[in-house]
Image (cartoon, rainbow, N blue to C red; front, side, top):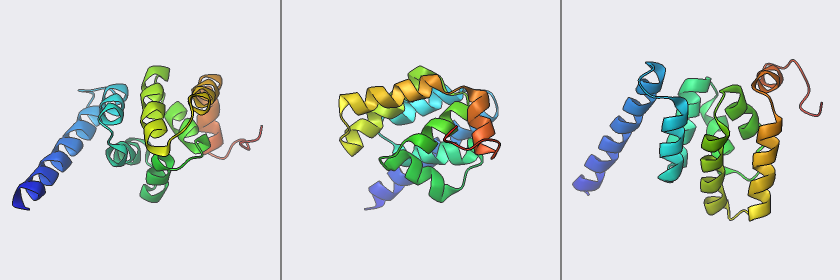
Length: 131
């Protein structure tokens, strides 16, 4: 049990270090997001979005772990995450949520159609998401 707690503490410290590295410009948001997605760490990914994107914790956790990806697309686009990094997030979500290949492709297509400027505008309340 002590070893598990030490490991948990170490992983939390590493997560905080990775997020700090993004804030300090020592790592890119893409690099850290891809690392968390490839290592199947949705909670750490949510924490990254929470700290970098200033989004409420309850929102970010649901973004990463629930089926509907509309808000996740908006947030990732507003943060200017690359399509490659978003693809890694989609792959992680597909494994966890048992999404089909077609659902994953549709998510990527919607991501690539959304501009960062429009995503920021929608998140700020400048447009309705239906537009």
